[in-house]
Image (cartoon, rainbow over all chains, first blue to last red; front, side):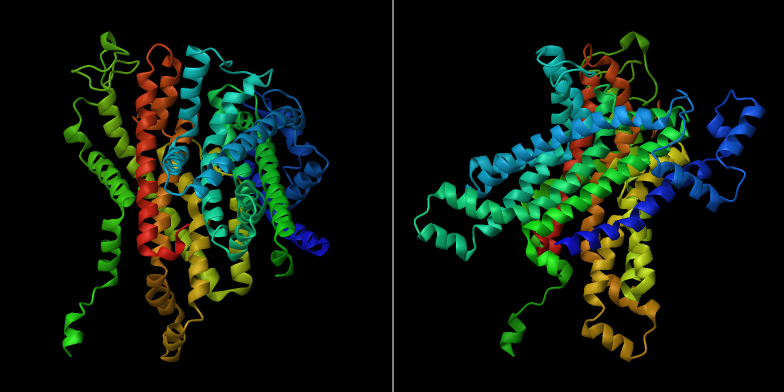
Length: 306
Length: 288
């Protein structure tokens, strides 16, 4: 297992290097002089020149990249053009919030998805199965931002059960987490149903039933445990999509997350903030995928030995 | 002899069509997609009002005989804007998916066929693109290119390249060791011919399925970007952009935000259903 983890972690390096290269390139692909872009619109020539020197922007590109990377690994993502605050400080506050939102969403998605998927598979073609699969279809087809607006209209404006936006308590996170988790719960429900249907047809499940085990034990102890293997991969992917989808949810509910920070950064041409957000979200996604692969190998020994 | 006469041979296309016709969800999905394309193409002729002309005296009116889906904040007819929005959405979907299909398939096929360093390089590049989760990659591309319709199509296209590359590569990898490819090599076919005359036609099924399903993803992504203000800009009647403007009137006139969202959902659902149906008909092995 240790060798597998090491091998899989090493495979991460080229991807992380590529991600950093893409983030670094952003400033150089945008039309205009990078030093002027970093200095902001109202900066005087002396300040631009000083920035050019400080960031090594008068150096060849590969030295600039090295400069960028050496700062990033020390947690220095530069200074925000708008706020004149270290980008890392902004990212820290905002990213923690996005992580909280994504965790809550994945919890909701897993809860709904797993239960719906398991019941659907045990009662195939029943009314519940049909309804939950139609629900799943709606879940994957609904735009997150529209669903968020509808939830807000019903539960915040009309029923007044939840606040309409902002942060503070767990109540502020419930509606955004449901909006963000809807599509994932649909994917998990479909995947769980398909995986369970395959497992419940296996001989060892028939044997478990023949041994007189209670149906509850057969389904939740024997079948679900084996059906979980392909479902785990979906968790990792869905968590990543939540980090992406959070951009939309945060905008709908006016939440101070990293997605909104990035979009604001684009509008304000605050490139260090955009670079930092890109780097942080992509790195998190890559690491989550690594953890998913490790979990996958843990549950399915065949993977480790391949 | 008689036996041979009785057995009617049917082509693969006929067989797929026969299976597709029997698939209820595919029929429903296909009908939604057909209606969407029909509305998009005929928009200038079937739209009751010009999409960008409004009457401020009639702003935020609920649905009525005169305006079947009501009016928006500038008194423009919602139905006309939805109809013209279908045209914009279809344009974005077709261009973006076409970009991804061509580039992704080429990269995937070349990587899969030649293998080695080239394959490694292409697939690591795809891994890097995939490292930006969901809509984040498209947003990052917009950060470089800037907002606008053309850039939105490019961003949505680039965002979809890795999926096509992976599918094309997978197909080529499973086919390139087959006898018919060996036979093609033996009769002296060059690599270009093998790639495009032998491997590509045999990899079409998963690529067609992905093209259909990707239409749905691209619509969700593109409307999301326009909702954020990073895609199509007002007053162009794009559904995501319409929703973004309608947010301010959610309480006073909820219909203004409900209709564009419903349109997006319906079309995405249509492509999803049709794509699933196609998958079952083209390659039943790929079924869940």
